[in-house]
Length: 466
Image (cartoon, rainbow, N blue to C red):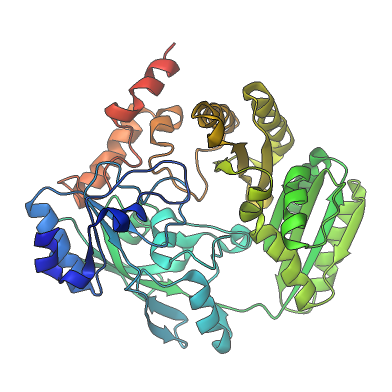
């Protein structure tokens, strides 16, 4: 720690036991203690730190706000956690070119608020928008409710400044939509800190929609709600968002947020369309008719901005509301084809019953990105978490067998790296490793993430071959 303090300055390095405790965890369930924490204030600081760590073979783990849900910011192999809390400036809002240049520690919602006066916004809006950082969004290729029509983070990043593991500073892309050669920005977004450290991002801004229409539809069963989602998309309507919650999740949300969701509904849909004023009411009416055709018991259209915000506060506060149901929960993040929603949700329920855990469902129904919230109580012993993880494996296996994937927006991290062989063949993983080695030949950038590691994954590998 002393060497790092001499390198960066004592105010930029943490190393006491009490200080390190704060950086042992993120929003997932695994923990590990770093050897030190660095708080750089500039790209030059990050480059100095990376060069030092490279020379001394020390792992580097980037950290935004710690809201990640796959253990991406956990120093599983020790080393230095690099917190970007002090690199949180919006460097430029370029209105004519509809671009913003930001440091990685900028809070997602802060960028939203800063660009709104210009009639612009940054589209990806994770549920953790009030706390998550743009650097974390880039690392995880984050999504959010409104990316159904507009795309996830990779569709809204045009340039990056990164620091490689040897301390080199490299710029990828810029303000232009297209650049010559390989799409290295696209390769970097979603790489979960395993290729390098983002020190600056150039992001695309989108005009705010002229108007929005938001409706809540309540159904007797999740099957009815799921079939309605497919019917809406099948009718050629692509809302900006289609979110779904089951009864257990709805009850927790209502107790916490009082959004006005019916407590007796088996499934809730939250649907929003936006864009030009002309034709918007027609789209809303078509959606409403489809909901009624599929058995919607209640349909409520937000009559004001305040009512719309309340409906969305319920959805975006859903994860936090789970504390009313259980002291601990394990959130999953699988992806399936929309048409398989009814079947997979039944399998999710069966997995909970099989392993003796309750599961609430809150997810992005429009693009088939499910988020089962598996509840447990560690006060009853570590076997509670084991059961939650066993249910999780069953759910992810079902997603892959349905033609989906392990993750939609939370990342692989250290939570799912052992499960990667369920989806990817050895040749696929080897190709991914070659990409990592081209950026990080020393293997110091966020080690123990994405790829299966013998020390942690041996037990799973043996079980999978039985």
